[in-house]
Length: 98
Image 1 (cartoon, helix red, strand yellow):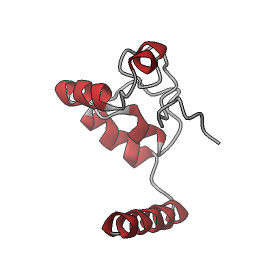
Image 2: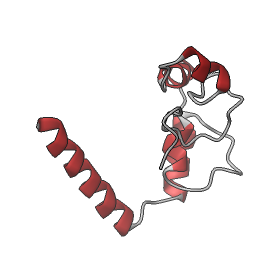
Image 3: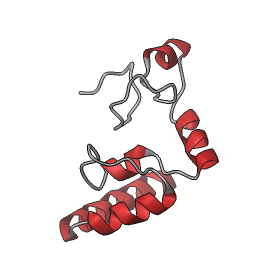
Image 4: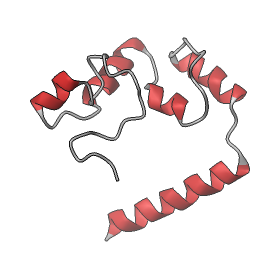
């Protein structure tokens, strides 16, 4: 079970001022990923959660759009991962329509 006081976020950098689970952001209440997405769009970067969904980022330091393209080429999604994503996407779309 997840902590209801926390936002879903795969980023482990709780000191980041944009992390929705940074204690300062939690104290403000209701802040999700908006600050992170705004920062990344302004910098031409991709949020770390996109990288994390594909593989280990512990040695990665290029969060640019071009860096993401390289990361994807180095960490291709498995067939099982593709099927799982398709199933989750279909379930999400079905729930959204109801």
